[in-house]
Length: 401
Image (cartoon, rainbow, N blue to C red):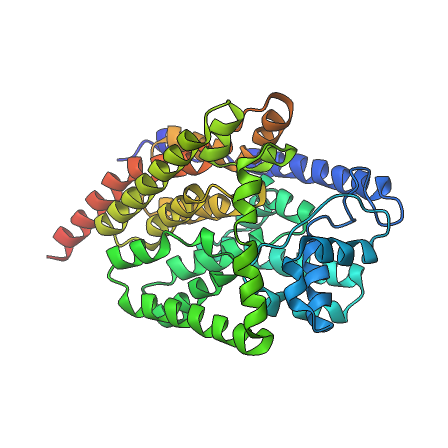
């Protein structure tokens, strides 16, 4: 007989209370940000909507037949300033050409409406996937209050959408391999987040899904090539090294970059050591993910480990990419209904869920980056629970026999 106290998750009341407090905090911050904006420009010199100004400027360049100019730093920032006179922050466009297919429709809407539609779509995709992983009204509340989702909405970024695509691809790999593979293939818009996918799918022998993912990536890339021509691809490849230059240089943005590379960089480690540690972490994340996928067929555990691995691999991640870890927690919670873990492990998940807020504060105030620990905590929790999952599966097999 199980000890319900020992295995009990956080109480319903504590989840509701914490979520409401955070949602009120987010509302205050959003209202404060809106009130501090003057003539479409924030006090920091960023355009209203911050990163969304990137997507909108790129969409206008596509509409005007100048898509390749998105990779020209001067031309791109000129397009942003045209929408937001007085903006002084510098932005750059590093997304592959297929991403221009995604943002192209935005140019046919006014800026405010386009930003609202963009943000609501990402938010809806994230919450829908969280519900799919763990169907509960508390899931929707905790998901909406997720600090990672707050950063995504604050920056009007792609975190909710990309995390939902990956989570769907991993979670539905057994039931709908072709559709799930296509979902992962759509990460051609941010491929550095899907590096772990082929290794884990191969470990699970999801060959149809691998084929569908590869075909989708090639197909979408081919469409972008036919529409935008070779000039845009050449411009993208020419500017591809810009992200690495920014990563290796100092900057305030590092407070919002929860990677092991940045964590060591902020501590003063040499660049070669940062890259070595990041590479070692990436290999370790893939190995652990493969082990989980080989050890269990539980879709929730597989999805949780896969999303955590994806969050750990790239050195170029931001706080809004923490949505990967947030959905990993939802996937684990769904699996934990079937195989409840020890109570202490729920503490790990609560900390991982909340970590994007204090991690950003520590990075800003003290140049200490701990955001990457969220994905590590999820991976540790999966590993600690896995023997129970395997044991439970063995008992079911014995009962059936």
